[in-house]
Image (cartoon, rainbow, N blue to C red):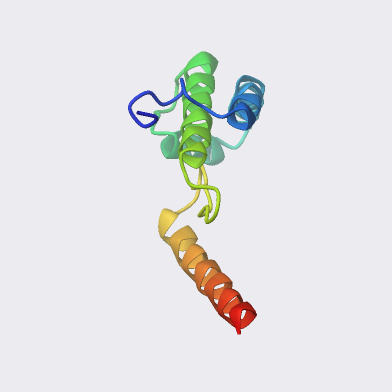
Length: 115
């Protein structure tokens, strides 16, 4: 049910974090669009799935949607072994490799404790 109604059934912690998403999105959009480096702007907009020449409101809304999606995704995971949340602007394959290493280390430390 939580997956079907994402955004509605969030934990109190997720709602608190999500309340900061609009300000963060506005700040990130401002930083991206105020840059004089057109290559940087183009890369950022490309990572967001946008084309150059879009307005600040569009960039801000897109960033806010991505932030909220990550918060919702993280909130759905069980507490005992949460994998890292995907980065907004990084390659997911790199993160999956790091998570596998961390889970192996945790499993090894638990086995040592049970002896």
